[in-house]
Length: 116
Image 1 (cartoon, rainbow, N blue to C red):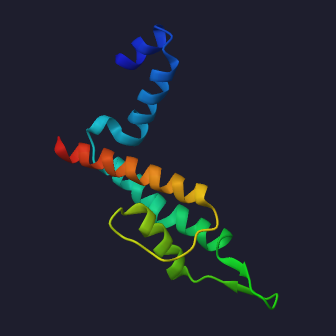
Image 2: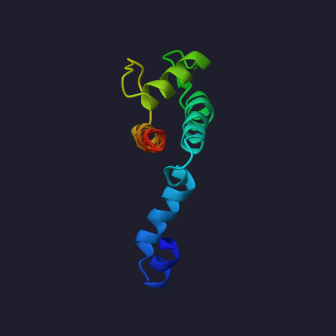
């Protein structure tokens, strides 16, 4: 009802935020939705990005070294879980920032759903 009222009152920014909250958080009624998105991002999407796009680096001899899957998962887990720290270097700070933002958001939605 509230989402419809926001649309009728032409409060489009609030409507977009409310729709985002409904899609990713499930209105805090189901803890499986944010947990599933967190696991999907942490275990599939971001490690794949780190392996494919940050895993290839040029050495001084001109050869390419492929980063192991272990390092890709380590990068992903250090961004997704606030307690963990790593000494690995990130090539793109904006991907790291996006993962930290969404992981924090999904963890917050998960905790809110557990509370209910």
